[in-house]
Length: 366
Image (tube, rainbow, N blue to C red; front, side):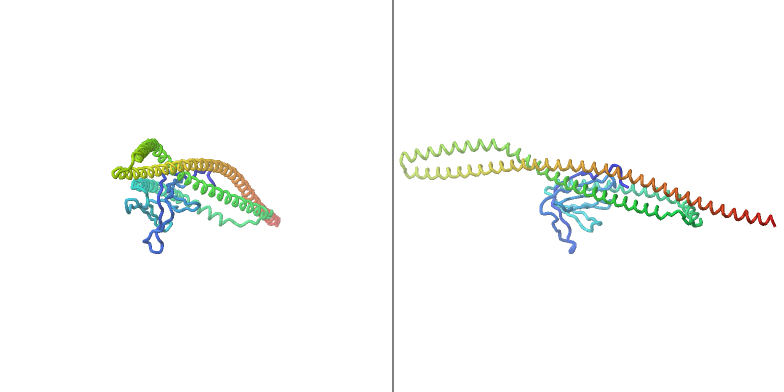
């Protein structure tokens, strides 16, 4: 039976890192799981009260690790850490760009592990309470079962095979409907997880580009002033060279001419380098606009997925109502069968009483 309002997994923390897995053959060497840094996120499942670390590369899940109370995240260097997942039978390693990112991930891992421990303790308390309730109800259930076994079998004479066939057909139809809705919900969750990971990646790239653009805009004015100064210096040196050529060359003036020519070439090369940097910044600005468009598309896709999840929840509600109706019909059929069985038992008893009455009449007549 599905819940009326299915809560999806919520991301609670995200960062970027290079992902590695331990070599299963040697148990010593690291195998890269990603060619470049990918988004690594902590997710919380409110339905199961479970925490997971998930990283998606393209359409493949690189990391899918459920955090338990006995897991430990170990820092092996200033920018690298690892933890072992016994369920996946592997060891994951993360390489971060800075020591601060490694520290933030380790602290969040400790917080999530403590939350998983508290959730496990609460689950154990509930199980102990349910076991105690079952132990109390066990004697009464055993007595009911004994009474049922000791009751005489009754043969149905009104053709129950048809009803049984209809009930089995209804059960098969409901089971297939359940499986189909489960599959639809799981596909929606995977798509939603991929879109969220893409959105986190785009947001990270967006923040980096915004910071680079702010820095570039701050330096553009300074570079323009430097270019103007270099151009003025170039014009002045050209005028000096022209004056020296007009007055005729001597030994010292020729040396000065060579020095000025060399300085002029250096300034021209510097101007070319600055022009190249300006073109690079302009290309980065165009890439920033493209990333903005991609981010808007990802947000639009995420909204469409949310609408699809709402539609799925509505269909789940309708299915549950149909299942409840089918359960009520089954209960009614069971009650009718029980009443029929009681009527048959009464018929047998009445027949026995009639035989007994006729026997008594014969005895009295004798």
